[in-house]
Length: 113
Image (cartoon, rainbow, N blue to C red; front, side, top):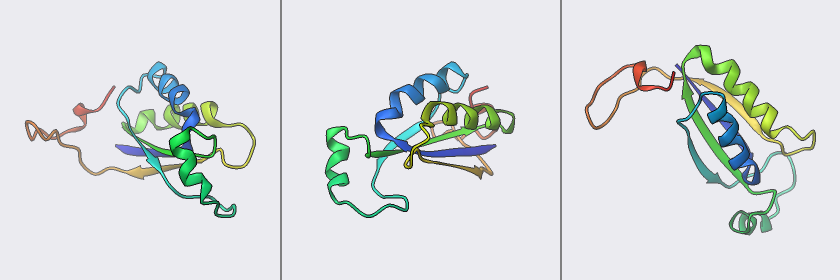
């Protein structure tokens, strides 16, 4: 199993969620984020997240079977690539175990197929 974590622009979130769902990836976690890439720090960006400014960012996390990693990454790139600085980053991380809290059941069968 792998976690695919993407840092994307907040205004791309709905488009990205739809595209992932269309690609067969329906389970994901997203949250607002604060930070920056290599550009200069602009504290107005922190206020921008609440106002829907393009520069506001989100972190999207998806745990998938190894066979789905390439499709997930390709979908994220296709949805978020504008060719301009700030399009985001994608990280692929190993996941050693998954468990459902309610029943304490283990296994990768808990993931979307």
